[in-house]
Length: 253
Ligand code: IPE
Ligand code: IPE
Ligand code: MG
Image (cartoon, rainbow, N blue to C red; front, side):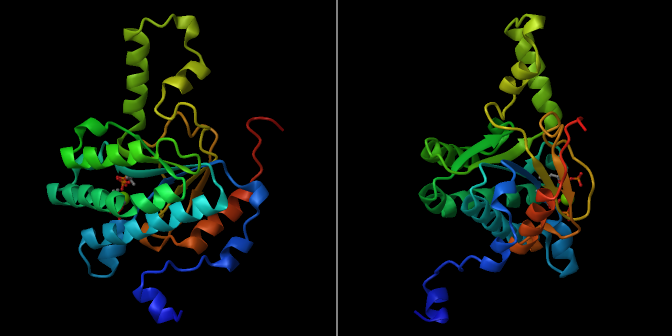
């Protein structure tokens, strides 16, 4: 089949083997967390509306999920919407919500086929009904899958998550001596998952923006100036190669 025919028939691009060759499979993170930032600036740079940046950003969500799954990475957490993002204009919020629904509707079959398990972090109940329904369908369909787990952080805030943990301890009357690191980990929304080994933030901003405050305690941090819509396979490979070269001491020598 010719290249053109392949494109017309919607055949997926073949993975870029050169990119994959640079990655040491023995030194991959088990859990990668990503603050997908810079969609608005990417669009502005091109004289496009911010919504065009968000749309382009969805393509990179596809790329990073596919590549993580192909590499055998176990967990991927994507920060899609923070508890603070409600401060944005209503039309931008609604664009982000529609893109989420569109993405899940379109991608669910392929994700399911790849054995991807979709989970969410954050308070989903505050989202529009149709968004909640589509998320529930994706989570339900993929719940028994054993491949890559993708945590979609939507209406997520690290502080709100910790507040919920404390409230739970109090309402359940958990004895103080039972509240240790293991108990807290089990009460977080990431219960049962390893903490992120690598946290990537795109677009040159060097802050955490209320992301996984407890879980990132010993994550290796990787910041790049690249805007999220430009964070392609080669950029992700660069981050993974950088991670492989880190000396993780966890307070030891
Ligand atoms: C990230 O891009 C997407 C979300 C926060 C949902 P931004 O929309 O924050 O893009 P910038 O930071 O304004 O460029
Ligand atoms: C963080 O990006 C949230 C997400 C990527 C979903 P923001 O663009 O909202 O963060 P700030 O406002 O620059 O800290
Ligand atoms: Mg931003």
